[in-house]
Amino acid sequence: MEELKQKKEWYKTWWGIIVVIAFFPILVPVLVWTKSNMSKPVKIAITAICGLVLVAGAIGNSISNKEAINLVAKAESQLAEGKVNEALISITEAKKLNVENDKIAIIEESINNYNSEEFVNKAFLEMTDEEYKLLMAGDLKKVYLKHEKANELFIKKLADKHDLRAKLLAEKAEKEKQAAAEAKIKKEEEEKQQRVDMIQKQFSVWDGSHNNLTKTIKDAMNDPKSYEHVETKYVDKGDYLLIQTTYRGSNAFGAIVKDTIIAKVSLEGDVLEIVE
Picture 1 (spheres, rainbow, N blue to C red):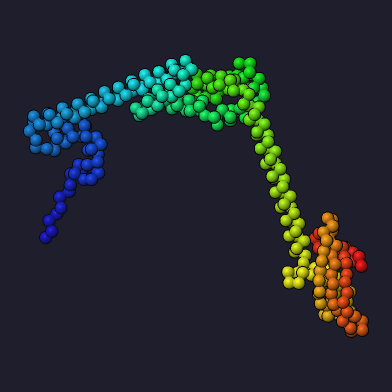
Picture 2: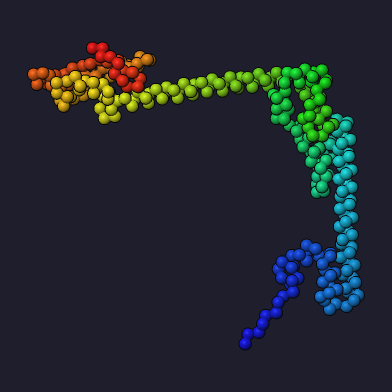
């Protein structure tokens, strides 16, 4: 008879080991006192060590939070003095501490946008004429950056670079003009190709004869079965096509003769008029 396997204690399973490792300062003392046969002094020593680890962690987090708060305050003070790059260094150091502080992200984003040439150009291109007047008068209150002081510095930067707006708008207008011209050329080429395709569909892919004109010719022949296409040419007259077709066929006396017919044909392929 097979022996029944004893069920493992939860803290000896793979997932239990992971839980113990993750929460060892708390769980280790519990397991030591409830599941081990260690002597009491050893248990006390292990419990004390885990307690110290918890205290050290709490102190470390407290120190990191305090350092982060000080660095954020330093960055805000530097921004107040207009020292943007120094403020970025301070906020970068605060970010390295990996603490939760919403101001760190706000200041970092604001400074990065302040230093971004692309962001400056975007602000000028989206600026209305009325906003430009307020900018030049020193009365623009628009929010570009989330951090208030950084936003004030950014508006001042825009005022210092105000001449850039005219240049950017001129470049934008030129690009739009060029894009419109290219779009017009593309449209004309597409329409031209559509016209060519529409005209080509009127002709036989086998011998180049015009399908509807061939039918008209055969309808007027004494012996339609004797029709033999020789050559077809056409000229695009804009509103219509002028088509010349040369063919052979039997006349009233049964003799094979060669003839040429010229006709006006619509762009849709309908025979409008026999010219000669």
